[in-house]
Image (cartoon, rainbow, N blue to C red; front, side):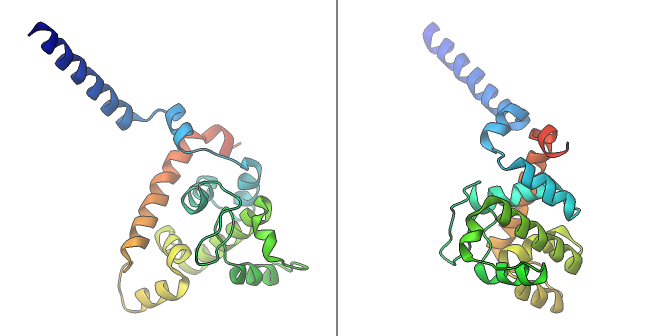
Length: 181
């Protein structure tokens, strides 16, 4: 009986410890769970486009988990999962000399294009939730929802927006010294 009580007490202590760790999530724990790479590119392009670097980091995390070679079934490529069609448009608007699809695997180019695209979505929508919805579901869908006075209609997009906003807060806290130099 005494051993049983001891195991129960130990189980309660372990459960409470994990619950507290989960609730407080100190930065060291979050840095393990939410890595940060290509910090210089994130900071430079965030500053160039007046964006929060934690937002760019959160989008990258959600889109590719920091894998520069990521490619989706829809053809989106790289860290920020940009389609070649979108990238060609960005290259033209930013007076790029020659765009090649392979360029999207280059972390600096991908982050540069992704930051430019987020900046332009902010200019169009002026609201982070709508910007993220457009990044995920496309501008056409967001325009249609707004025209009909509707909120985000896709459950997947609502979840995407919430996750990116939550992860942005984690990056702000856990990686403050690297992102805001």
